[in-house]
View 1 (tube, rainbow, N blue to C red):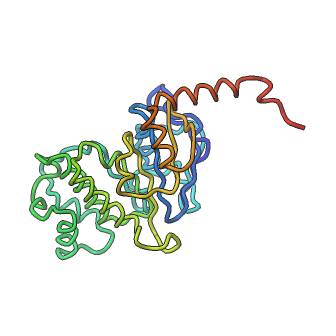
View 2: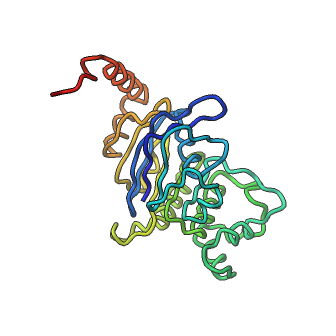
View 3: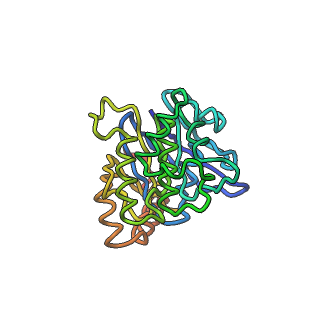
Length: 260
């Protein structure tokens, strides 16, 4: 359903992502690890279509359609949703109104109240968006909006960041519900791409494939729990060293030489 091919992205005059490729199929959950500043959020924001992030090479296809040139709102209507690591405070707009705007189905007080109850935000519906919210409350509000939208592709930016253990457990439960983890993979309608620095979210949400991004490049792909074990033991410094070593090998003529 999501296919990214040789994607290069610039912000201003600086190229941030370099020839990124990955594929996520319907019902799958993938996780992208990486140190801070490695380009993880840039990738999500580019998939979502934020105009600040300019595609200079490559393409993004979703549900068989090239969406590289679509606007942010067109992508949202097409079935892509995103939760942010640090969403803004929006004064003058009630949380209830934002949830109502996100609803995929016709607006109803019953549906909104059910979503608020499931996210423990029943007392927050008439408060301004994120104003005075704790870290956990902000992340639960993001999940409530995504659950209202019912996207076919959920992009989750550091869902465990700034959240205590109790809230991480609830957010993990909500992510599993959003991604329909209680269904067989062939019956799921939603797929997910989670980015994480710490990997704590994997204690609550299972992922099929993991990647490590360093310096705007995907350095490796494999079992997410195996990748996380290496990161926890040796740190991202080992991933950076591995990437630099691979870059050095690929620049050697004998490596690039065609094999008969």
